[in-house]
Every structure is written in C-alpha cells, then in structure tokens.
Amino acid sequence: MNPVEEVVRERLTERRERLAALATDHPEGELVELLRRVDQALGRLEVGAWGLCAVCHVAIEPDLLEIDPAVSVCFECLSSEERHALERDLESAARVQRALLPARHLTHDGWEVAWLWEPKGAVSGDHVDLLGPEIEGDPLHLILGDVAGKGVAASLLQSHLHALFRALTVPDLPLADLLARANRLFGGATASASYATLVAARLTDDGALELANAGHPRPLLADRRGVRPVEGSGLPLGLFAGADYIGHRLELDPGDVLLLYTDGWTEAAKDGEEYGVGRAAAALRQAASRPLPELLASCRDDMEHFLGGEPRPDDLTLVAVRRTA
Image (tube, rainbow, N blue to C red):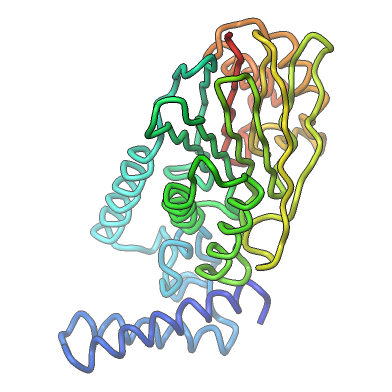
C-alpha cells in the first residue's frame, strides 16, 4: 500500500472499531449497514481496488474520498438522492467553517488588521483567526495556518486547529511555547501523514510584534527600507512531537505593513512558472500605502493577472497588519 492508502486504512480501521462497539449494544440496521460498507472498503484496499468506482471503474474523485473513504462509486454514478445529500453536507460544512472566521477588518491599540480568505472549493484548509484580549491592555493574537491537503479532510483539521489555539493562547505564554504545545497536541490527535504550517503573531500596544513560524511561508514586511521577507521558521505542526520553535520580535513604525499569506498566493503557477515571492513583494510595494482591504485585493488581483485567467490550484488567504500609531 502507498502512504495515502495506509492513512485511509488507519481511518477505516478506527471507524470499524467504533461502529462494531456501537452495533454490539445497538444492532440497528443503519449501524450494521455502515459497518458492512467499512468492511467492504477495507477489502478493496487489500486487493488494490480502493478508490476505483465499482460501476464505471474509473478513479473516484479525491474530494469524495475525503468526505467518505468507504465510498465505492464516483460522483457521476451516485444516485440523484445521494448527490443532493452530498451537496447539502458540503453546504453545511461551508457555513460552519465561515461562522468560525473572525471580523474581516479591525483596529486595536494602534494596530489595524484585515484579511482575505478565498477557498478553492466549498471548504478550505486555510486557517485564520484573531484572538482579542479579554482584559484591556493585553495583546491581540493573530493565527494563520495551512493544513496539508484539500477539501473536507483539510477543513476538519482546520477546525481542530481553530479550537486548539483558542484553548491554548494566553497573554503571558511565549509564542515559541504556544507552538510547541500546539504541535504536541495536534500531532497526537491526527494521522501520521497530517501536518499544518502556521505563523502566529502577538501585537502589543507599544508597537512590538512577536512572530513564531512553524514551516509557513515567510511574511513580507513593508517599511521605509522597502519590502523584505521576515526570516525564521521551525518545523510544521504535527511532524515531530519534540520540535522546538523560536519567537522573533519586530518593531514596526506607524505606516509599516506586515503581510502574511498561505502558499496559494506565491505558488500559483502558469505554464510551470510560479508567481513567486519576488512578484508578491512587488505587488505589496505598490499597494503598501492603500487601505488594508484595498491592499489585499490588489495583491490578489496581481496574482490573478499573472495567471491570465487560469484557475488557481489552491486555497488563498492573505492577512495584512499595519501599525497605525
């Protein structure tokens, strides 16, 4: 089996154990049917037929397999009722995910923050959150992450990250320690092939900005010296339980802008050529003085112009932070 199939087998085996325990005490027909479908999927894995439609024998859509790894037919071969049920589930998942997003534009203690979040499909593996202080004078926290993969499976892990950082983030915990704790918990609760890149920022009322990076693309800083990447990174969350992280302190002057982004921006490609950090920095340099929502739209539009109408292959999230006082 390849690594993807090994992960699927782990998920299906865990699901089978739970269903078997439930079916023993409550042998309802629906539970027994679910158990039968999981057993069939495990059998298809063993003979190398998993992921192929049992009706037309073509590959089942990846998004459909992410929703239900026990599915045995492709989207085209689903019944009308099954299609409508799947569409309703995706719409519900999208509504739940959007409800978790923070305010799009806010100001706090001399800081202004705005973000742009555009999933590739109905749901996203990109994670953005702003954690406001519970006590006046405490810092504002910003989290931007990107779960490996796409579709429903990535969105479920994104929701897990949301809950994890909401529970762990406190004003007096260094960001390096915050990422180390999140890494241990995230890795312990997910499959071995799951991981997420992430950057966390803490904004204080004295103009200081603390950053800690877990394998995420380097943020871009626009100040009086121009635009440059902010160095420093650790391992993505979920790869190694004992990974260490480092916090970096920046001092921003009024008007300076820090732009955080997921790789759906810089790695968008046309004819094998990526948009890249160089074009991204130039786009930020041109738009750095604009209101933050316009700045974000301009950076996104510059990438779209580069693509020339070709669809981007990934989720896209941009977050802009400006020091205002």
